[in-house]
Amino acid sequence: MKRRVVIAGSLVLTLMGCSTQSNTGTSTTGTNSTGGGKIYIGVAGPISGSQAVFGEDMVRSAKLAVDEINAQGGILGKQVEVIPGDDQAQPREASIVAQKMVSTDGLVGVVGHFNSGCSIPASQVYNRANLLMISPGSTNPLLTKQGFTNVFRVVGTDNQQGPIGANFALKVLKSKTFAILHNKTAYGQGLAESFRKTVEAGGAKVMIFEGINEGDRDFRGVLTKIKGLNPDALFFGGVFTEAGLIVNQAREIGFTGNFQSGDGTEVQDFINTVGNRSDKIYVSGVRVLDSSKFLGAYKAKYNDSPTAFGTYTYDATRLLLEAVKLAGSTDRAAIVKAVREVKDFKGLGGVLTFDANGDPANAPFDVFVIQDKKFVPYKQPTA
Image (tube, rainbow, N blue to C red; front, side, top):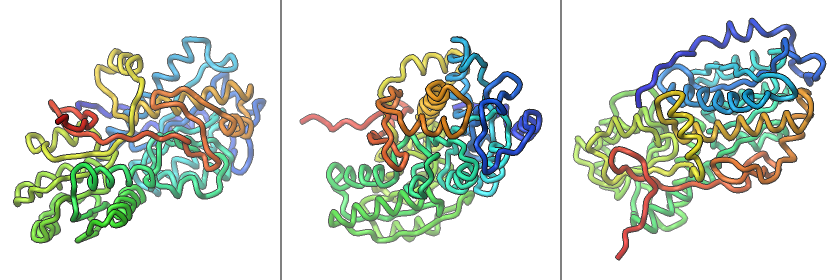
């Protein structure tokens, strides 16, 4: 997947240019949030750094949704503009981005963040300002269990995804012994723990459960230990940057078992990294049910294909804009209330209705394999 990061670093200048007052701890009213005749929405994620593929995809997808609404006359008679915020997949940066977002006049909500480890601290900042936050990618259950009424996500949780991959391993792959690695983040470790709990409940044995460091490049030490244990499968809770290296190095030292991971690995860059070592790889990821029109528009505008989270960002952006429309105001409290009352919103990932925590009532996941250098849903071989 060839991508160029063209918007990193724009956050500070953009926000300083349109910020005239601090809204921290208050609800921005329609009267005071005209933003010079525009309505602003934030899109926060890792726009630069090793996970930039996700952040850039989020901004692109949000802009597609905004372009569509602007072509129809905008919202409340105003045009909408996207304000990107680069958290670099770092929790501290996410909090800084969140503070700038809540202090931006005319900003009615944020689509983001992507990583759970960023969304959780950022959500505390948004909550103090009662600013709507809708994450398209954060799956750690803690995000929506903090008692915040303004925090939502359009993707399922690790407690939903973990059992899907685990039950697939137990029932389809017939795996009985596992090695589990994770990247020590809220997302990676949370998913790994959910996977571990399910396979152990199913009678399987976890032979090793260990963390690795994000950014490391050599995992041969722990992989050699895993090879000596000879498990049926190796599960990794983390993202594609380390997952591809783990697969390649595991195969190089002679590990022949199955490799499993989660939605942070369901990226074309992972396929490009593993190359011809793509057999016996099984990745759980978000299901996309109806995206042909979106994919066509994305391809036409960017000459590229989105990740699955681009689709979910598009849904989150449309939902945010619909909430502003239903509220009939740019008042932050009214917008949060409007999202709380959403029922059966038709998204590309399915029909969205939120539960009391702000999670989607229905969160579909699939297990994917690699065929012809693409991720495709796994299909049980016919007899």
